[in-house]
Length: 341
Image (tube, rainbow, N blue to C red; front, side):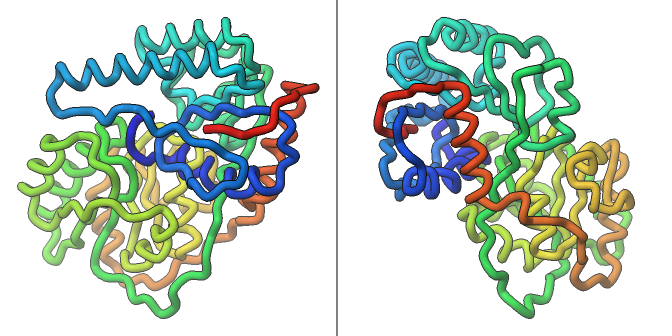
């Protein structure tokens, strides 16, 4: 859930390709995450029965209710040894409290996977995973927690790609990602630039017509649709800079991919807590106020941007081993035979 591909699905899909084949499958793992996980993993079964959301509000609410009933069933009655769930579905409004209660009542051991800074009133009764040291420090009151980095299955980049006079946003098109603020800042930037850069958006459009109508009314901005996760670094090479307007991130995959692609990253100052090699001059504190000046700076001639960053910490094999060790630690003596998602 929800019925589109998100970052958690990409991360866990990379892990599953190794976990299913190389893991001693002596217990059952139930993973509740966004759709989009790889279906090539050995020993893994999938349930893609969640309903797609409809644009009509009444149907959307009905679909959400059915989806959450299915999720509650998985938590309470799957019989799995471990339930691994992405945090933002646990704490969202009243239905999130119901999910939390179900997790407390579940006979399964539970892992809560946290990837952002949205939550404050929790931290008991379960085991927690954070995707960066900075996020672990942010939630310092939580005791049963470890850091497991974002896995990156990086391929060799295309060589000799000359960046165009363009900026790019990669990610879900959603209000909480700062997309509307990015559009406002870009419109302001164009008014003050004699030769402005263009701005392209890539990702699932969760805002529907609200976004498409808005972007179509801003000269130089365009929605380019969805790009497969494995193709993102090569696509980044076509741009001068990647823009991440969100102020609530744990370890943003697209920033790491931009570092790997050796392109400029424009992001909120909080992201530097997790990725310190991003120059402070490329960061902002207020998107609408600060981004126009950063876009103007990006106009200057600039080739590849070299960062000192150790990508070995994101090796999928090592991360898979860390996660498997966590599962074994929290659920010793497990007896079932399949990993499921």
